Length: 418
Ligand code: RNT
Ligand code: ZN
Image 1 (cartoon, rainbow, N blue to C red):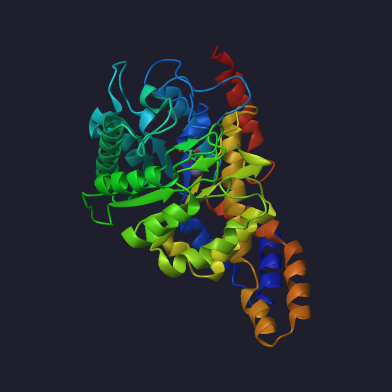
Image 2 (spheres, helix red, strand yellow):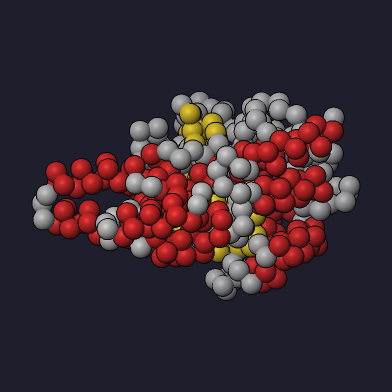
C-alpha cells in the first residue's frame, strides 16, 4: 500500500471528523493477550504428550505441527508475534510451566516454574497473564473443583488458585505491568441437579479463600469467568453469569466475558456498558462460537466489531483487558494466532475510526435516518489503507504479505514434528 493511499484515506476520515493519527496511536498502545493454548490444543507440559482432558471444552482437528515442548511453543509464538503489528501479551495456563520433566502437583507450583517464561517475556518486552488450570486432572474428573462437595478436593483447588495468584503477582512485579489471573472452573452437572444452591455457596466461599491475599493492582488483578454450559455440564453450571456478575461487583474483581459463553442470540457487546456501571473492569475472551462454544478463530465479524465499538464509544479501553480464547487444531496453529489477533486488532481499528461524534449528533437530534445511513456507509470507508499504514509503522507485513512466512515455517519446522 502506498503512502498516498494512507493520506487519501486520512482525508476521507477527516471529512467525517475522525482523526486517523489518534486512532493509530491508541491502536498501537492497546495490547492483546495471546493465549498460549492455541499452540498445542490446550495440552500443556505437565508430562510429555499431555492433552486436553475433560473440563467440558474441546479442540477438534489434527493438523500436523502441534508444539510438543516449551521450546517449540516459544518458537511458534515468536513467529506469530512477528506477524502481528504492535506489542502484545502472552496468556499462560498453569499447565504450561517449565517443569523440566518432573511431576509437580498443581497445588505446589511456584514462580520457579515460570521463571523461564518471565525471562522470555522480558527480553521481548511482553506482559504476561495467567490462569489456574482446573481441568485435565484426576481431581477434576467428576466435573467439580472449587465447588466440590468433598472439602479435601475443594482445598486442593483453592491451594492451586492461591499458588497461581502468587505466580501472577510475581510475573507482574518482574515485568512492570499488571498480570491478570483469570479463574475459570468447569463445575457443573450434565443432568438436572436437585441442589443448585449448595455448589454456589461452596464456590463463593472457596473464591473468598482464594482471594484472601491482596496484591497491588499495579502488579496483579483478578478476573472471574462465567459460562452457560459445557460438554457434560449442559444442565447446570455453578459459575453462571449471574453468579460471577454478583461476585465481581461485590468483591471488586474483573468480570471475564467470553464471547462463546452466552446464548447465541445474546450480544456480549451490549453487556459491557451495563457491567461497567458496577464492576471495576472487564476481561474479554475474544472468541467465536459456531452453534455452540466451539472456540473458532476470531473473525472480522459483526459481534467482534460491536464489542470493540462499545469499548471505544464508552471510553472503556482503560478498564478492559483484551484476551483471546480459541483453539482450532484443524488449520496451521501459528496462522490461527495470526489471523485471530490481526482480526481482533482490525475490529478495534474499525471502532477507533468510527465517526461516533457524527452518529451521536444525529442521534441527539432524533434523526435516526441519518444515523442509520452513516452507520451503514461507514462500513465501506477505507479502513484497509489505515490498517496497512499501521502494519507498515509497526514493521509488520501487511495483509496478503504475512502468509508466506507461515508457509515456509510450516515446511521447514512444523512439518518436521512427527
Ligand atoms: C472455557 C473457558 C476458558 C478456557 C481456557 C482454556 O470454556 O472459556 O477460558 O477456554 O481457560
Ligand atoms: Zn474463556
